Image (tube, rainbow, N blue to C red; front, side, top):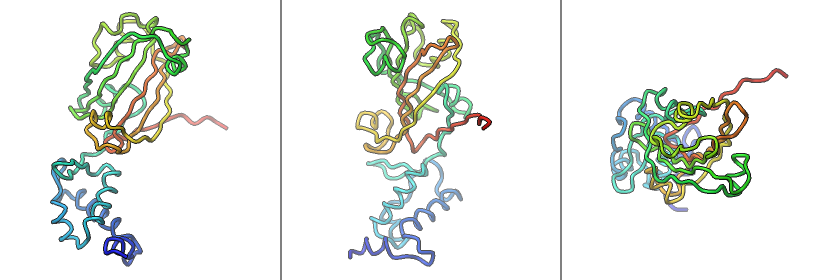
Length: 248
């Protein structure tokens, strides 16, 4: 058995694996303010000597903290202490980020009018070939990239949408310009692995974990006006799901 393997399976007094014990110790020190937010942790070599563990064990511990959103790793600069996750509810990204006391932003990658393919048509409850507006935006919070949104709108319900401001809240645009009332939204949540392109946009490591929301938004007439695929950084965002419990 190698030293690294023996170290990981040798139980402490509480029968806890070494990497979990190290993760807990570092988490406590972060919460105590020993390592300030958005500053780098000490170099791995120094931490290994201080904590008396191998580099493999330390990296497993850092992986636990990364999954918890406590740290994020930069391939060239090291491991940094993360700010707390931004908590968002299902709804308008701009409104939710503002509610969290942060400044929302959007960077438009592309926008076009196109016929709906089978997937988009099913999402919008229209026939394939129906004209839709499609756009992709990078959503930011205090200039930090949090989500990549690919969104489709029924062109007949929001004619000329692409001629307006596409860098803010599109729900706000829909309400103001088209006098439509957004009545409800539904979403399916999946855990995904970020591909290379999405990772690059979000400033995350390739193959890191992400959260994908497949959303549908309905106006008060019952028509689906928006179908969207939103991919979030799971280490920086937590999604709050709330609902009223029906009487049994």
